[in-house]
Image 1: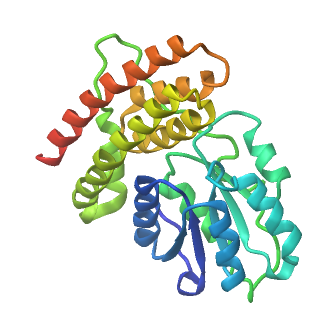
Image 2: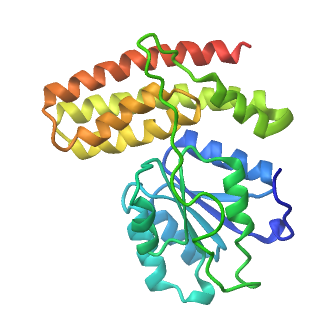
Length: 274
């Protein structure tokens, strides 16, 4: 059961994420919970938006272009006084132990791992009061999960392209509009994912390991959100090994990613027809 809210209409939220699928998924969850949010696509846009108008909450992706979320959090802590400073909630696809402490040390108030769970999002936002009502920082030791939750990764050779329980759970959370939302998210995903794969291939040909990591990170989180958990695992492998592996080794991972994406695309389009 979702908690009740008494300050939804006045809570001003800025969502910071550079990938369309993640943006749409978060916005739909926020709307379902009764919130609205503005969107920033990189770290510099976050700071510019905060200069233009006050926000009560910033949902901040840790890995963004131009300025990453950790540096954005440090800048917010330095430039805004406590009574005017928004709650900064870290959202990251790097569900590794130790990341929570890094985010909190940078000045963030709370930490969530992707894919975002609507119940956890509701609990965190329910602790955030409009700045005019409260200047106290969010309790980072709150009773919701303090460590990232693990995603189930199938281990069988003939694994399914999609874990349908992920989609079923999301549909249940979204209520009557669940199927409609899934169809819309699939459209966004199949438009964005091939572009990210092309970016990865181009970066590999240019030996741009950092660009490979960024694109793999973006594809990783959106794949997990739609239940493409093996593709998510391959993206994690590329993101982790990109700094040190040989180009031949990376090319082998990318080839597996491309093959797996084709399977995912077919499975998702089949789901749209259900």
